[in-house]
Length: 96
Image (cartoon, rainbow, N blue to C red; front, side, top):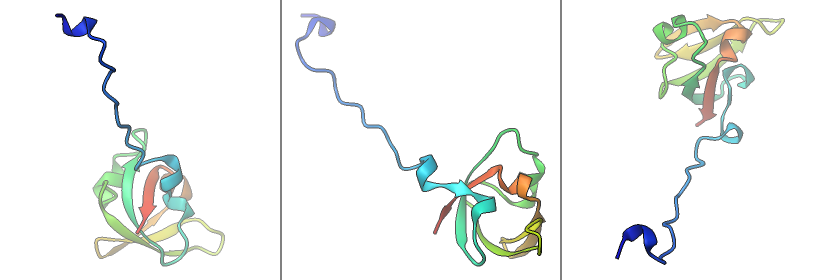
């Protein structure tokens, strides 16, 4: 008997939905003192972001914003870094 001719139902395929748009947000959306983990970086973003320490899995804290909202300051690996909002929008994070 050929396996392709079997009357057995096809095995169910489990689809992971742990990392969805609903469970992540842009780094630019973090409020003051919120702690998050970097989940993904837009591939079109500058490699400078990774060089600064914004790598998937890295924990960070939103420190403060300039009076007009741009730039934003984040604490990453014990260092405070300022990012423009357009750069912060390229980084997806999940709240911790």
